[in-house]
Length: 515
Image (cartoon, rainbow, N blue to C red; front, side):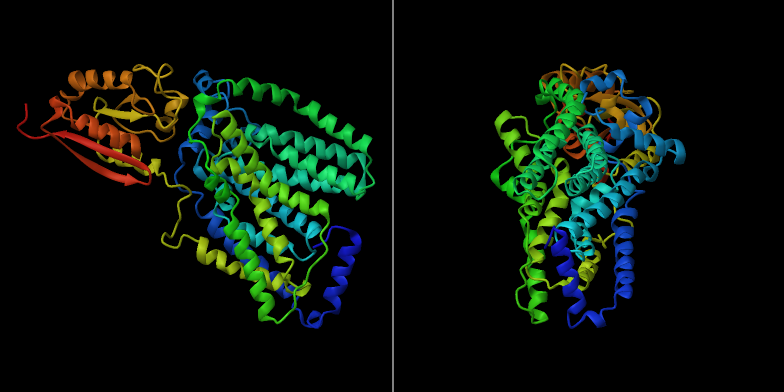
């Protein structure tokens, strides 16, 4: 691995003077790697685009179509607090409101992010490591997930990668133009998602290591001025984040993380697998261990990108009791995982084997291709098919449909029996419309919800020939069991219309002859 220009030149001389240098296919190998990458992206990123939205993507559609100032969004003010929504808004105006149109900005953002990650690897690790790190990224299921997700995470990966690339450029060149570009792009990162704040520690760490090691012509006063400017640009976001922190407990959807959760989030298995594959390749070609010079600055960036975000969110979750340790909130650290694996591989791989090693990316198609389905689903939630199944029942406009909200904010005192359906908490009913008369239920059971359900069961459900429970699987199963135990519905029968990933539809029907 290398960072300095001297190390880069030495690595290139090694490639030219190696016994295989004259025999390397060069251009043909690049074409082969490009074709392989296109196949991987087509299967992993493009083919899931037309599948159903999941819950948070339907929230995206709601924000885009109703605006961030829509009154019902006040129950979840963190949801519209992102510049990301500009992109799907543009996509909808240009291409319509389909799932593909909404997800297209994420595909483009991830493609640009992948290019920048490859350039960072070529700069910090080895000039030929770009293809290798790109393939390692594609081994990460959550990395690919972002590309087909109409949520801010792909944009976050792009902005984080661009910020680090511009930071490297600025510290290499010491030009004010690069410094201003870094501040401009880095100031957007927190505006993409409020959970991305730990990345600013990585920026500071890498800069300090370069300054302390005299590995840049930038001096401390100039660096302090640039980071002060970045701090000023972030002040409005800081004020917003602090105001939202006071009610953070109302939006927690995960339990506090354990040490095992933290360990899994670091993806040690992938890092170890990449290192083992590189070591086996070195043995296969009977090459001795090759240890490349690694600057402390390069190491600080790679380790910081890999470890800082998970460690900070873990500590925050444990210290405050408001858990934000969700896999999707950790997506922005995944390039660091790929860079860490690539950095360890550099210990084993001679220079001439970087590109041949990247050809192992064919294994991405084998292990990540979801070959049990011709058209893989983006998420294990098929709300579109579930709503269509309801339509297939030809429900009349008066047939009751029990609709638990999929959003945790839908609970008393926010939720009430007459809560409007045309709201953020029931955005799934607005994106995928269905027949019948919907009755809004909260996210989970409560005394108020059960009192409302009892009254509804006696006065409305028992006099209807049938009714439906529709929503997330856990909520549907709870209310199916609850209504099945009601005495006024004792002679009724229920049956599952289908399971659509983690979405379920259960139909209750009055048995013939029952009065």
